[in-house]
Length: 96
Image (cartoon, rainbow, N blue to C red; front, side):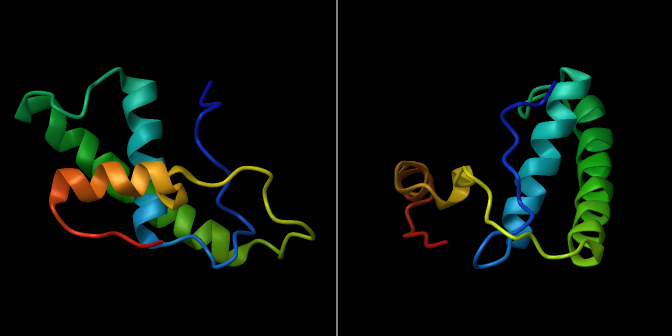
């Protein structure tokens, strides 16, 4: 279902809170069909669910044993083209 959510376990350096939160938000958007720019009545419950999922994923990543090999794909927030797009939107340089 969520093929586009990148594997965060085993990254070097480890997944950041921002990467975990982005994956959680993407998961919630996918399962609910609620867009990021939704009305507050829809957005607020989705943001709360995303925060809960991010906390669960953070704990899970800490509890799982280390991977023998890093994941095959680079998380989106670590890709130069995504960092450039976010920096242009925010007006600040970003680094992973």
